[in-house]
Length: 123
Image (cartoon, rainbow, N blue to C red; front, side, top):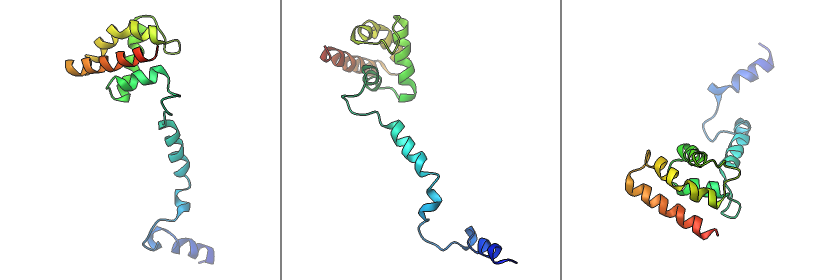
């Protein structure tokens, strides 16, 4: 058996010494972790769009919230890029109805109150 083959066999997973895993084994994972942290970071309140704020205030899981708010806006003929305070105020009845499909009535009322307070403060 050649020396190179012997070295490869001895350094395989069976011959690994116990202890922390060396960093070089994670070099393919680290960029993915960094990418995920960038995608998850939504920025501060100053850089956040009104749509993102309403999505967070809806009280729904992010899985459902974006689509629910987007559909409520489309019910009144507003698209997300052009959504402004007036568009969200027009969409509030549709948004309340769509939130009622996911949340109990007290939670819908609380979410609507939070959203309306945010819309009134952004004048």
